[in-house]
Image 1 (tube, rainbow, N blue to C red):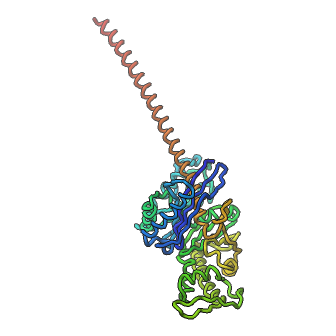
Image 2 (image 1 turned 90 degrees about the horizontal axis):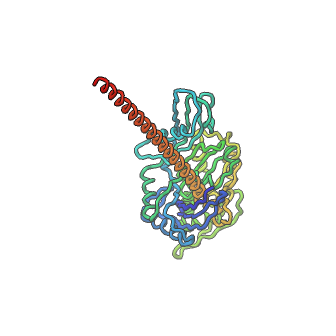
Image 3 (image 1 turned 30 degrees about the vertical axis):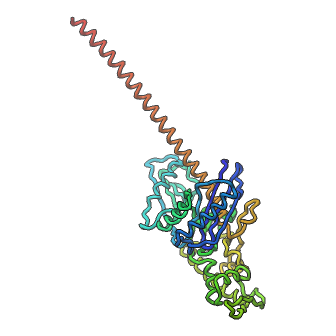
Length: 432
């Protein structure tokens, strides 16, 4: 396995994170440096202030470069936001005869599916194969080598708003870097938190970020659905501000220190919040805080369940359960509340990087997942380059064969002409 060096940037609503990692010959990942800064200019996963976001990116990138001594120029960047859309579509090829399906056929399908009609303001971010149909088999995930007169591929296509994509690219470019690839954040978080067994048996990963909640559904090792809900932890903070009539920083502190999703589990205790400019101290019951949080989290999951229903995801077919990650997954008893709301088993997902306890936390799932996802993309690039080189070599071989055939043809023509001249010459001598 090839060694890799990978730099990533997670542009989130509440924080911007840069991570530099490596993969060794055995496929093991290690994190060499990480820097995080509170985000400014990002709302619900979308950049609304290019200058502030660019400055934040410069800050975290500069810090990581100083820590590692690596002057990287390309980065993998996460993308999310409520502008993300999903489409299910299919593409087929009729061969006109029965033959073995080849890898080139699958590549041709993917090339053709990219031509799908999209709205004027949307462009493709990810094309994820679901399964394939042949003459005698439906739903196979390994069609290469099967004997058929046709091949049909079913795809999960993720699109994003052109303007939102352009702004992210511009921020990164203004920071002196090039975007190697934009990676869907739910997919990145899944790389960091889900196991192979969970993806096989059926699992729903929900990344509760600051501005959005990202969903990825897996079954039989396939990503079968993704979605972005425009509510996250920031909505909880805003509720505390509005209902308790406190400052945003005070609400955020309360959420971090005292947040609970189950009022019935809280004691009859009071939290004191200092008054502003000499005003009296506010006394707030923990149960009141829990009631506010319970209502908001319940509403977020109402939206999530509605989204899953509209996507025709039957929870009964999700054999393993639900994995919660992201900063919102740190809310006390959130796993218990979600189990009550969904009747599915729930666990909290955290990255599992060796010697990197500082980032093995739910809030860094996307940033860490971008390293793993980036590695997969680099492998894919290498495969594509290898395939392109094979085509070039095949082309050269074809040209050489054609040149040899042409030389043979020219040689035969020359010989024929000489024989003709000799025969004609002999006739002329006889006539003379």
